[in-house]
Length: 440
Image (tube, rainbow, N blue to C red; front, top):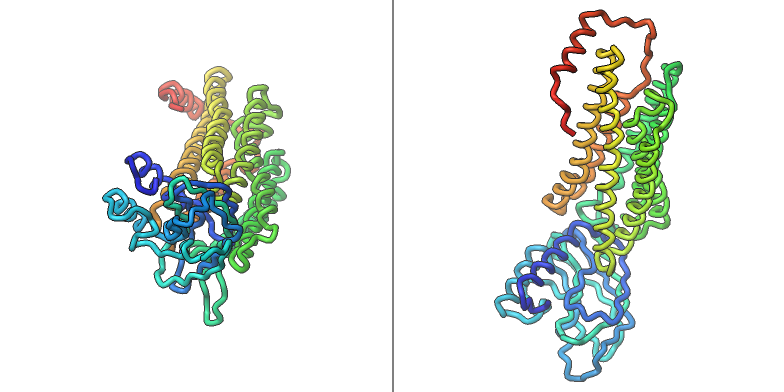
């Protein structure tokens, strides 16, 4: 692959490297490489400022060949940007160079010809250019496999005292962002408690479940804020990542369960779940378990992990399946309300319920599209300095969805003696007759 003998392998390499730019979260990173003959291994990605530093410590280095004539200058570590890597591939394709380490557009951190028989080294590389760089290990010697332990620490120096900031330049504000949103959700929880107390005579069980989801979301954001804060200061989460994964798991399951329950009309339209609705829950909950396991593997292994790409595909597939599964109860409720509107003589009431579920269906589709597609697009096209904007966009969309759900399904006083006049009833019945079938 180092010499790009065919275009398909080059394209695969471009894809893999480009992907690693958007998914890695730099901190103190450790990797164990065992008998690996890959010519290119991306290890970590980080957004540097002009005061950036890379500390690289490699130990237990061993090669599969003991030939003293090996050109060890073709094995080593380098830093490159996305644009410079594309230029390197062009140089390799044109035959200008035979090894990425020999390119004049990459920053060579360390080559193995400097080992002089040693089996370990420790070096520090000072950045002079502010950009997003990927740390890459290159082995341009065919049939030579490398084993070693790699520990890298990337950080930027802040302030006059040179305080270390281990978060990438585009993510250094994330602790404050998550903490701010956590406070907003706690405020929403307080408002919801007041609403439930004020309208306690018309509160259903679903409303208490909605409160639990909001509180879990707030706690999840607080844990994520602390997680990122510790990484920012020390390069390690110090256990906060465990709490984050736990509450992220609980929040994910509770949110999808809530959407299913709302879609079925549980507690506020009917006090029970049908068998097919229970089946949806039995599908969604295990899928969320798998999704959270995949997310943990993705976060903890990084793109170098042999199964990282597989777990990434599993996560995306399971997430899409969950989103599709929770739509079925909403669709069933819409169809049931349409049938009831034609048979029970309560066209106006059923039309209002039908309109509510239709709107919720559309809003949910928009929410899924924005958080799964638009946010990813923002993360891909946005400059590394503003990667936090995709996080803000995703959290704003989630906040808007929570507020919309709470507003539309808040406790309401239903007067059993409320009478709809004949004109309104006839108008609603006529609208149902003339209305085209709702496309789902």
